[in-house]
Image (cartoon, rainbow, N blue to C red):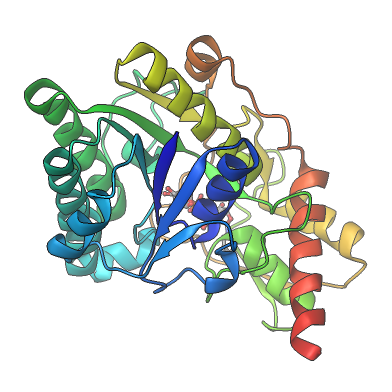
Length: 328
Ligand code: WQD
């Protein structure tokens, strides 16, 4: 099976590409390297440095003939999307429409899309299942929901079969230590903690300890990237076999608090990791936890690498390895 992984040099995309190649799929990566890194392109992949806004270029690549496209090329900072919606409208909405139109023109039939828990907004109940109301609280979440709606129409009108994978909080690195490119200027909790542990950032700011949670800090559902990669593979196989579109949550079904993660990181890294408590970040809910029952029923998938120790230990190994290489 031949697959084009768009955004395959990025954080999640690099893990998906690696996992697919390990299972014998023929992998090509298309990425403009704006946030992804060339270190994540393995020699056995075909690589096209193109921008998803360049229709002619991506159509040219797709005409090489693919059984499926996995699309993970997007801007993903929810806070930034509220101050720079133009960037998110263009990259996440226009960019994806370009990809979908090129896929239809080139005759690619299967499409795996990186969606997000951000489409649900403030939780009305927990755990969040796929039937939960969809009211995104930020423009980033809106762009993902908008594409899911366009996908429903392209399924009906163009026969494109899709899997919309709604990630909760992706974290961790390849347990075998092969993915070497780290995220640039991270804003998410685990990579920020890693940067503080490495001495690259002075301290962690804990955004609020006055939430109605056991220790007062925010609780999220952290899902290891290897579990996400496994789910992409299962989703693609399901699409190829059943030829029926679907949308599922991908989470560990476990809630972890900011302070629990900080403590675990201090233990595992052996570093002090200075932290201060600051005010809540606008739009942050107290607690988000997924129900992944649908992914289990449909794909036979459940999280296997998403315990706190594995998430922190695999992240720390990636950061330490990277820094050791840079010193050489
Ligand atoms: C996690 C927790 C923060 C940074 C985002 C997107 C969402 C989805 C997942 C992809 C929260 C706290 C964080 C810091 C902190 N993405 N925190 N100090 O906001 O839950 O979700 O990623 O689709 O759409 O919004 O992730 O990693 O930013 O925060 O205290 O420096 O850590 O308040 O409780 P978030 P996050």
